[in-house]
Image (cartoon, rainbow, N blue to C red):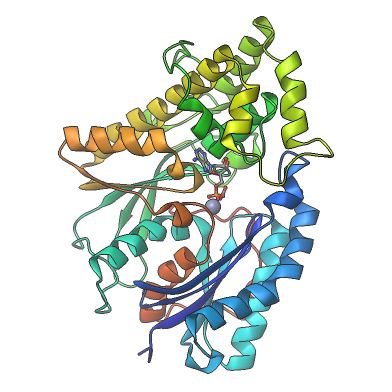
Length: 405
Ligand code: KG4
Ligand code: ZN
């Protein structure tokens, strides 16, 4: 049985190097995140080679800071947890290699965590912390209850039925995107409008100033594509699991709306002058390190703000409709929404209102636990530590690792 229930977790699957120490999956002693946003921003997206190099630079100081902040010595730990996939191969390998070496040197067990499972446990960690529960229980749901989890980030838009099983939780994939992830659509639309990277927070902020009903994006533009005949989807984001056996009502598609936004921009000639100003603000050689919302607002005309608000309204509406339809069809007793896009204000507000209308419980992680972090990886590792489910010493990166097939 673990002595202190202390897990040091390492996360390096994409563009954040993170380390955290969490006790018994319910008490965060430290959570350190070194973001590479500044490195990738000028390219408008994550450059894998640069990501690996930045992880190499950051991993030692980030782990050291996590131990220091938690006031924990390596010898106090019960296990080392690490994200093994999905993610960028080179980026994952930095975290895995470091975690393996540390576990070996300290004689500690190594626990491999799926990044998507980590996002789901971010919500559970949050709830446990709020309830100040510290009694070693691995869950708050009854074993016969199930939660519907929407993981919505830059790489994923997946719906799972999550159940507290003995030891690790069990997951059943219910739906997912057949092309772009929702966060990817946010980032691409932001890029084509000349906004900064990542685009989600900019669109979130600017959408508050536009009319969400101004541009009627119809749902034929976000409709599902069920005609792949079981073949793997073409895009990177959707490759992690087959879609053949999934109910088409719970499939998402976000590449259509990105094209619709582009058409609208071209048709209404929205770009030229504003774009030049946004370029100066976000990508130009003299761009400020941290542009403010007011700066961005000053570059956007009312029509662009209406377009941004309408894009967001359509995406959130689609996520909402399919998530609640799946919850109802499967009889899940509660809904968990997690991943970077779960930080979105309109998403939180509309999911909360809809859940209240249906007398359901919906939960989100705090903003810092919504985007990538290592506390969520430590939380997901806790039931595995209790069950003695450890990774082999041959553990390697699994860039396309799926959850709940
Ligand atoms: O979970 P995450 O940090 O990394 C992945 O696993 O992908 O999610 C990052 C994604 C990006 O696409 C970013 O634009 C989006 O989350 N995002 C948001 C918001 N904050 C981050 N999207 C909409 N609204 C936000 N407030
Ligand atoms: Zn993530």
